[in-house]
Image: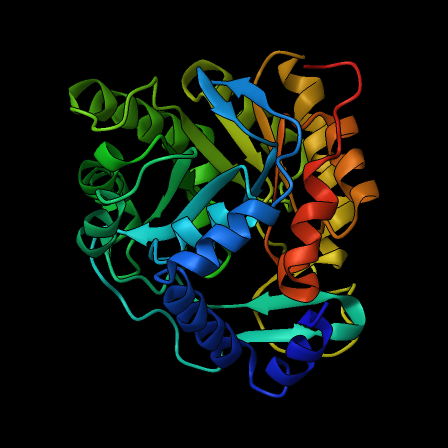
Length: 338
């Protein structure tokens, strides 16, 4: 009830300062047992499902980017998310791109970011992950900026080695528009090499959380049809699922010019949903898909499910709408699929 007022105050700050302030307050609140008990007692449970041998209490997750360094997993779980994706985490710590690098377009209900994988690094994140249990926890990993693209696979291997033992699954970010050359890893040859090496790493890893530990690929919404079909073919061979989609380089849906960066939120919805629909056509009905991009309402969530999503994720819609967003979305059911 108070979030609209709180959002108005937060929006007086620049977007990244507001985000950091919010994270600090959530971190403090999750250390207060009475606050956590109140959140957990009031959350909507939603409709549970099984995927990759895991039980999801509902199909809504928080997307990568909100909790980059695994600081808020317990708080987000208490709010009612059915799973959490932290990251993007890089093998070594890095500051990311210079500020300002995160912007709002409220009229378009959008965020624009050129953060560039600001990360405390895999070691710091793993130290937090090892203290967590409960709901499904995915870690999104990406390439350090100073690592040449020809050494990218080894860099992903290092991140995997450190964080994967404390996760339920790994999501490979090969689609951020803010790390030069990263999207080249979506090409069939490079993606195949990356996935083969990740599967080898999984086979050699001793995991501290039980399960099959799926490896998913997060794809761009800006792929053309041949590129998308080739990528999906590789994923069908070697990945355990696809996350569709990352942010877009198409700024045509914005109401103001805010410079380079990936667009999330409402302007992304139609394109990301169409990519999701096409991926489902290419994979058939059984392959696990996660739909993300521009979800603000229960109707949006239904459209993602209708397009083929098994699970959905949100970030920007949560930022704009607050805790009520979670309760609104978690009860949306998939028609015709369990």
